[in-house]
Image (cartoon, rainbow, N blue to C red):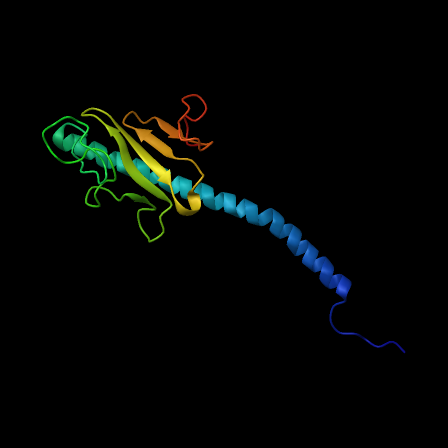
Length: 161
């Protein structure tokens, strides 16, 4: 007589584990890549917001100087002792991306400024380290240091894509 066995055989269980392993091997790297891209897109949006804050400042005082950057320098050559470069004060614009929440993936700074120009920088930190910095200037030129070598190539890295 044949008895009915309940449950799975070892072979059936091993096939299921193998299928899950294959799917995981494909899905996890794809998911991590999507998370990295999403965080970079958030930093791009934060840089755009930062640029808007710089333009509002220019509208108010007719220059980009004296934003009050923390850890920066007075580069405009005026008599005001307020720093022109560095991290912006929270009252001006958040110095991190995402701009809300506790986790920081990019630090936002003013890397260079004159009365009529500026360059904003988003430097990856934490889980984003190694993804390359983002840069935006007053003309709207966008750069992404894709190869993370610390420089922005004006031919191959002049885009955020």
